[in-house]
Each structure stands twice: as structure tokens, then as C-alpha cells.
Length: 155
Image 1: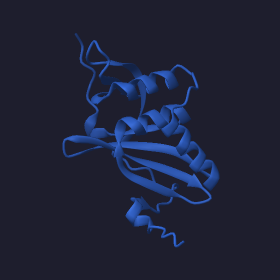
Image 2 (image 1 turned 135 degrees about the vertical axis):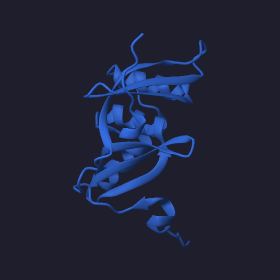
Image 3 (image 1 turned 60 degrees about the vertical axis):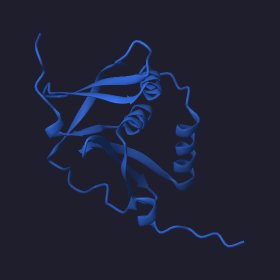
């Protein structure tokens, strides 16, 4: 049986040195609040805050992912299948997720996931909420494009 392996560019994998200079248009953020937009927990809500106090309110993503983020953030290690699968792929290939970058693409939030180890690679244009869940699970930096961050609103 012939098994064809796709070329890296067909799998949205691009080689990039992890040690490349940090882009100046990103800030590291921390999650300060996790919740839901609606009373049924269908739509998730995150408040991300940079060290200089600027905030980004993220919503319009699955309540299920918000629950995973909350679970990981609280230190519990109940790992859903898809995250466990990624962990096993990384272990098998001797690579580690080291950071995620969140940016806007059209009307959607997207993310690039940066891996290093046996090889360096970047997975581009994935759902931001899933990338944040992985970042919280692995306790790695979450970077948000600066143009998404806003001054804190005082009530």
C-alpha cells in the first residue's frame, strides 16, 4: 500500500526559527476572567490583559472551549481527547508548543502556534480559542497583536 505524505505547505506548516526576533506589534497577555456571554454557556468570553493594563475582550467562541480553558486555568488536568492527541503527536515527534500568537483575520480571530524541539515549525491560521486553550494547558505565553488591546474601561 502506498502512503502519500503531504508536503509541509499543504498541511499549513511553515518552517520558522523560534529564536527569530519577537515581533514588536505583539504583547504578552494573561487571562483575568473566563465566563460566558449567555446564561446557557453556549458562547464563551475571555478577558485578556497585558502588563501595561490594556485589555482585550474575546467572545464569539464555543462555550465548551471556555469550559476547557477554565478547567486548565484552575489547574485541573482532565484532558479532552483532541488536546491529548496533540500532546501525543508532539511527544512522538519530540517537539513542544512554546507560544501562541492571536491576531485578527477579516472578521475572525486566528492564531499561529509555535513549536520547537527536534525541529521548529509554525501552524498558521487556527482558531484563536483553541490556541488559547492549548496555551493555558501547557502554561506557555499568549501573545496578542497590540492593535487588539485597548485601555481599560472605567465604570
